[in-house]
Length: 84
Image (cartoon, rainbow, N blue to C red):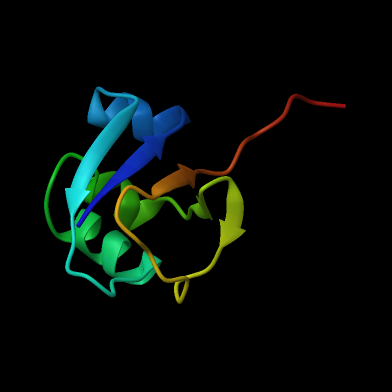
């Protein structure tokens, strides 16, 4: 199945794109998608050092969230704010 990965901030910069497509086996989870991204592709280095919050179809998700064809995973890195 094909899913879309939406990227934000440093992830977008490192990938050089707003989105990636990823092929996964039926029954895959968010953990499977992240594992694939951590092994190959333009995000290997950044995902090794930057924690991400994940959303599937605009709802926050965890590693065990199941995926279906045409789902969208958003990977959101930490956001730093200005001084108070």
